[in-house]
Length: 375
Ligand SMILES: Cc1ncc(COP(=O)(O)O)c(C=O)c1O
Image 1 (cartoon, rainbow, N blue to C red):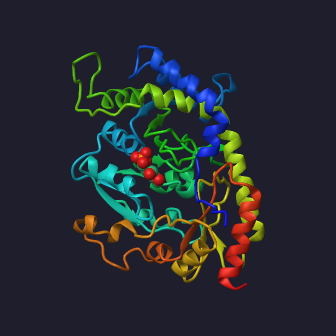
Image 2 (spheres, helix red, strand yellow):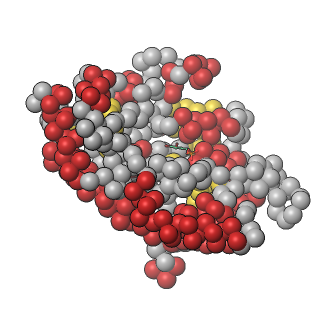
Image 3 (spheres, protein in one colour):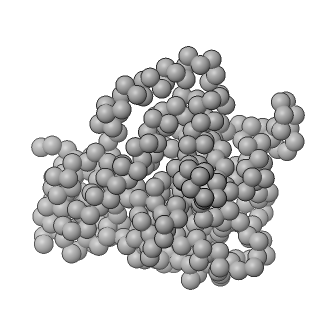
């Protein structure tokens, strides 16, 4: 029986193999392995991907490559002066790194419950999470779906609280024609290999349209240096290396097509899923990037096992709400505090999706799901 995997990078690697090898060779032979021309070019090219070419009239963004997506969040927080004892509002149904990045600065995560239809931060509940100590809000564009950042901004109102978009899962997504990652004060991307734009190792990017904030981010990623060997502020070591930047430069021109392929697979699922598997809805105005295709099902773990028996790999993103994890006991949350998040954790199931997944395999997933659910 042919196995259908939830994610597979090998076919894409084979399709781009000669370009990738040439790019890696170019980086290796350049004599610059850290903070060289590949990263400089990739930062510009990624900015152009987000806002269009400079001539298109969009506000340009500044991009600063860092070692991974977790660092992208924490470096931005540090650059904004967020630190010990400050509060940062985010969600509990996210990847743990959203929260580890907040803790890395000494700040305290405050969790907002999510909307059951979209799985995203429930904007009707944000106001009750804000306090005098709130120093940032991090909406997570989970699964490739998009939080309505302009609406979030209006809810925050006149207070000067930065919004940092967690874009680890949403490369290529947009809201009413505006790219995710260009709506907030700053945005953090991950290039972890499974992401819509994935390196062959770790990588991340900080994005902002504020040139002064970009300059501070650039300094924080390199020990707080402004010039050489002089720390103007406290910083860290977090740089996207030349080899990963060269790899990402090969893949970036294909990102649009890759996301379109994801959307085509999502459309097959939308059309053929059994009624008992309810897809998570794109938020209003969102052009979803389908990093993950997630449904809600009853008896999720049994369904998962049934699918595995039929050769279909699945995932759960994420099975444990962070506010109830032992590592975060000290935050003082208890079961029932975030009822929607807690309910979703037991029902969500991620189906196979990646740009090269054959449409026939997505159809087979739907057949298998029907058989397992008994519809
Ligand atoms: C929502 C979210 N935020 C942050 C991260 C952190 O990215 P990285 O793994 O590159 O540190 C990830 C990826 O794992 C993620 O999915």
